[in-house]
Length: 461
Image (cartoon, rainbow, N blue to C red; front, side, top):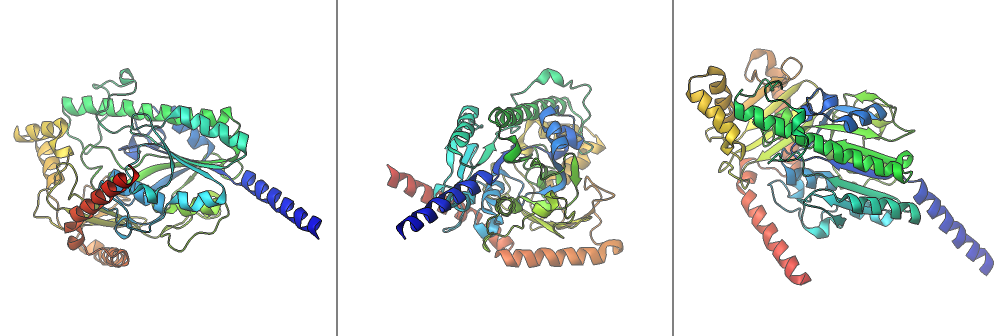
């Protein structure tokens, strides 16, 4: 009987070991303030050979979104699988509510090492028990190399989030000589000034530096023979710090590049127009590893899309922006949005207040204002559109991808506008989002977080 029991224990051990070895590793590489349209394989002018090559080896998403167009809410959303207002992390530089769990809580008990290397912007640490490492707010390539090496030697699966600080301003990295200010093509919604051209070139060069980081991480997977069993995701995060991107609920603020490679599972060079969100990443990881997906998660696994079984994932995707508490932000300018396959609906809570953020105080935007004041009609239109918004905006993304022709209130879109408005309000209710009341509570949410961080730091010392 004793021998039989020992045999069962041994068999169970090897079964568990075999399961761990079979489970995929996960590598998620994320940029910081990068507009998806600027990446090479998305039609952009940035030189991104490593990301472009990855797109030929996996699946490229043309409709991936995060829930908020700024760093902290985006990252909390990604790691928890919960939307920002419900988790509590909807202002910038904030904390999730007590009891919220993250990817580390779900994968560690299954035998995974869960690491985050680079930029954090998440709190409290008790909700995010990663193995942390960083070099100047960027991924520590040496520590990542060691993680891969240890994984091979210990036959231990891992989940790595490699979080770059690029191309976040001040745009001082990358190969600037690759970009000629006189030859680059500015986006149609930009104002053409020398300051804009200079800054845009520096920004593009820094996207190239992010691409180099992606390449280094992929090479390390090859170095340790991990490529075949590693599920790789590369994304661009929210849009750049230029106008009409970061801090807005326009497509340039909420949409993200996403490329996923999983050899033997995902068809090389495949593409999808399925709408997915960052909130879906955690359940997708759990699904890919054949683990149960907790009901607490609000995201939905898009594994069927990756495996080529479906090309539709969600009917609606949502966005929110809170200016209260950001650097140089308006005293209160909350934004909520929803989009379907074709139309975008944006609700600006306080259209009577000027829209402000770090961008409106930049040298680039000041050069736009100067050109507008000198009588340039195009510059005047762009400056006004950025700083003053109507309460409701509706765009036909099929015919107006840069969201320039607001058709809200027109007869042609009346039914669509009512449907999207209803969908947005239903989602907000499910989140406990009270609109302007929630916006006005943003600073209190930040203060509570700071007090909690100070308390935790004191208890550790």
